[in-house]
Image 1 (cartoon, rainbow, N blue to C red):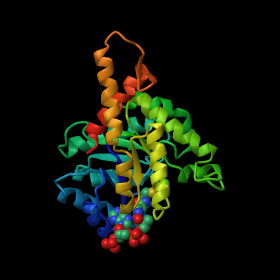
Image 2 (tube, helix red, strand yellow; image 1 turned 90 degrees about the vertical axis):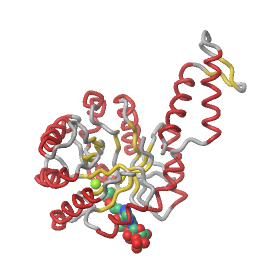
Image 3 (cartoon, helix red, strand yellow; image 1 turned 90 degrees about the horizontal axis):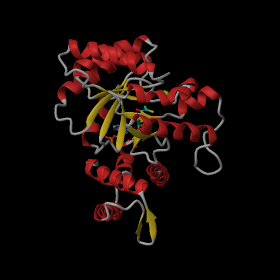
Image 4 (cartoon, helix red, strand yellow; image 1 turned 120 degrees about the vertical axis):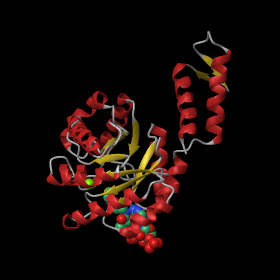
Length: 290
Ligand code: COA
Ligand code: MG
């Protein structure tokens, strides 16, 4: 379970070097939107060399390639797969079929570079294209390599011509709230991690904390980050508190002590099967949070 997933532009030696000292659970070296087309050839090599050099992998190391319908995607893979990244982030995924296409490319690259078969995971950005929203339920059929599902608002907003992505308060406006919820349901249906999109205003730490808290409340277990200052806030938001863990253990114990009961009373509340499932999820989250 990865709480914080930090984007690091693939064209910046300085930021790549700095990524080592940031406590993100997962680092995403970007070759897409954060890198100008002319800088891409060099960025690919820079990322590949860094992957070669950084053997420790205390954080998982992923690379965001370009969309699959571009030549750049093939070029990205041709260079970075030699560095054995832990996974690939796929932007502008059109449909779950893209996962099958990428899987074939990864199969070939893994064979070529002597990597363990099917070891490279995939994290699609699943809501950047309007048509993609109508296929989200199908990710459950291509889940083998999926790390999780995440969603993006920037490109989606540009596609539909939205003047703003937010309502009166900082909450998402309806079209983006829908994409966010569909991503959550799709991830749950596929049995993979739901990862919330980034909070763009990286100087607003309170806003980020509130956004991460809402995501955790709704069932997301991690969040994208774009700036080092966001990482600890996100880690804290997705780490179950001692009180939550204590309560989850108490509910599990209560059901263990009453094996024939369907519904029980806990601190004046009714608890039944869904509460037991949720309590087990919190315990598993606490165990997996690193
Ligand atoms: N990864 C690693 N280091 C980063 C970083 C990142 N994503 N963002 C900033 N830093 C470093 C800076 O280089 C700077 O280092 P220094 O203290 O050694 O000088 C330090 O953290 C503080 O950065 P700051 O000055 O506050 O921000 P900035 O103006 O340099 O950068 C952004 C702002 C938005 C350009 C930068 O955070 C960034 O590149 N984010 C990622 C963008 C990206 O990948 N987008 C694609 C996904 S949408
Ligand atoms: Mg984008």
